[in-house]
Length: 120
Image 1 (tube, rainbow, N blue to C red):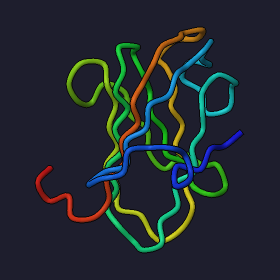
Image 2 (cartoon, rainbow, N blue to C red):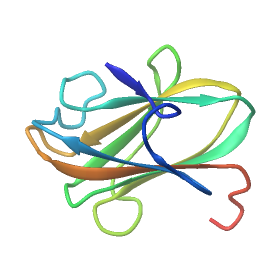
Image 3 (cartoon, rainbow, N blue to C red):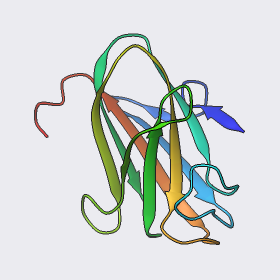
């Protein structure tokens, strides 16, 4: 199942921030159950920053519309958190929130920012 971030009840300000949970995660996999998938649709080309924040050691994937991995990350910013920053064309993408090991449970926050990210 893929949740559409545009319709999910998330906090929308300068960034889209959503709180979710893992229950019996699928480890570092884009296909195993337990790793939630989220649809991200861009109506214009943009630089996108996606952050995955959790006390659980996590792994973040960005897939194209055919399911191929465009980018992945583990532990790139403070703690055990993951971040992807990438320039993307108009289109639909899939964000996969995974964990570094199988069968993990816990909460996480997914944040998506688009636009001028020059301060990174």
